[in-house]
Image: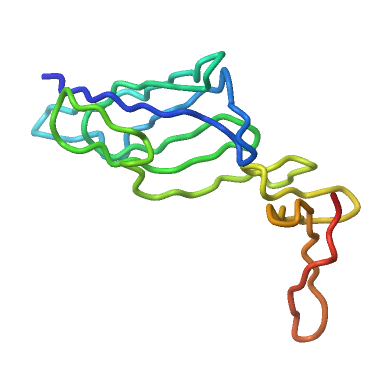
Length: 152
């Protein structure tokens, strides 16, 4: 018996730019379930954000899901869709565990617009108050972390 719920969201980066035509993949974390010889498995659901608004809608069974936003880099988090059917939820209201998934090397690519690795500089963090990118510096023994003066 189907007990689908509607999950709504809109994709944007940290600067407020809408992320359009981006796949969003929902992978069930609490299946398969077993009852004797019966194996029940929910399928992976993939939707794409709207080409104009960045909005997406997914129909999901109750349960826990790993979610991947297939932007660059890939962002992932977990959802807990409550029991019941026919309900509508905003994605931010049912997030259970946000985690970032980063590729092993980033070159000049923002993670939600706040972190990048720049060739010749290294790891940089964006400061929204100063509108500058600050390079993380590790020096001394024992090692101590610091930041440079920043660049635009």
